[in-house]
Every structure is written in C-alpha cells, then in structure tokens.
Image 1 (tube, rainbow, N blue to C red):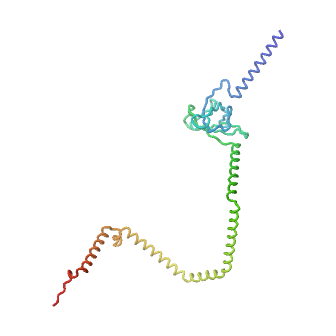
Image 2: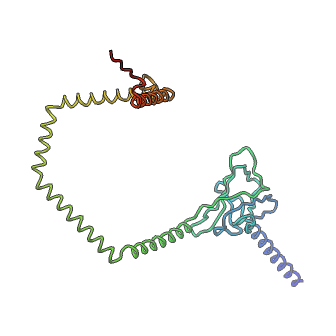
Image 3: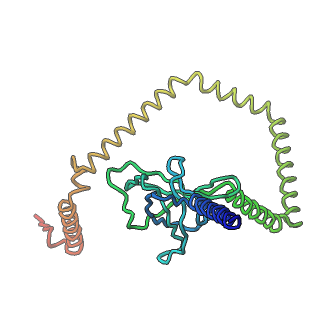
Length: 279
C-alpha cells in the first residue's frame, strides 16, 4: 500500500512538472490558451540580425513576436511572418520598423498602427523599414574611417613625392620673394603714390560739378539713342521705314540701278541725249 502511494505521489509530481514546463513554453512563445492571434507578413531588405521569437511591439507594448523568417523569392531580402495579438488594430498606413531592442544588438519589430480610415490588408506582403542600430552604425563608421585612411594614404603617396615637395617649396619661396618685392616697391613709391592721389583729388574737386553735368548729359544722350533705336526698330519715321520696309528698300535699290544704267548710257552715247546747234 505504501509503494502504491509513493507511485501516486511521484506521478503527481512528474505530471505537475510537465504541466509547468508546457505552461512555461507556452508563455515563452506567447501561445496562451484561449488567446486569438493573426499573422502579418512583412518584407525587409535583409534580416539585420532579426531572429524567430524576437518581440513585436505596438506603442512600446509587447503585442506579438516574429514567428519565422524566410528568403524573399520575389526580390532580394527576407519575409518575416509576425504573429500579433488579436486586439492590435492595424490601419492602411501602418508601418513596421526593424529596430534595436538593446545595446547588444537584439532586434525587435516596432509597429506604428496608423490613423487611416481604411483597414490594413493582411492578405498582402507589405514592405517594412529598417532603422540602423548603434552597433551597425559603429561598424559602418569603422568602414568609413578605414576607407578615409586608405584615401589619405593614396593621396600622400601620389602627391607627396620628393619632386612635388621640391616644386611646392620652390613655389612658396618665389611667392615669398614676390611678396617682399611688392612690399619694397610700395614702400619706395609710397610718397609718389600719395602725391598722385592728392593731384587726382585736386583735379576732381574743382571740376566736380562739371563732371556731374557731363555724366548727366551722357545719360540723356544714351536715353535719346535708345529712343531713336526703338523708333527705328519699330518702323517709325523715314529711317525706320528704310530699315524695316523691305519693299521700299527694293524700290530704292531698283531706282539706283536704273540711275546708274542711265548715267552709264549717257557717258557711252552723249549725242543721244545732247544736241548741239550752231547759229
């Protein structure tokens, strides 16, 4: 009887342990008895460290998990199947972001549920967005730093040759010499330059009113020339008609040709036009 009792006790303990194990697995995998879930498929350019079982959050609350990840056969990338709680209401403008869940690079899917009046179509595969995490950003910065170092090394090897260094040094020396010569010339001719400026001021000051009047006259003359040119271009006046009237130009050209022919004929046959009578 005692053995039978021990067997019952052992069986109850084992059954309880199995029940607790199953409950723990269900809790870990977010499979609660009586809980309704639905699936959503999201396409990403790459997994970026995402794994099955990673959490899915809505407004900062855990509302699902990544069920599985497969390669996208339609285009490069992956398709993540998300299992969401039934109370998550997605709208047509909902967005899915792959973000860091911790500083160690753990991933999660953050959902913006949207504000559209139209519901989200879960039968379609929608595109998700990726927010580069801290670790990925540091890796990219490392790559950029390495590339920058290589570029600087290449520039140094290509430009910092002994010949180029010698040419640059010579150019700097020439510039320094030229600067010194200019400074010396300015110093030597400072008195002459000052006197010249004074002479110019003396010349301008008494004749300032005349210069202003001349400038105004030139401005008026320029305005008159513009007016004349406008009238000619628009066909106003005799000059304008001569410039713009093609028929008048042709008539003048024809008349001039006839006049030249007449003069030539008179020179060739003067008796034809001149009659000399002697009384």
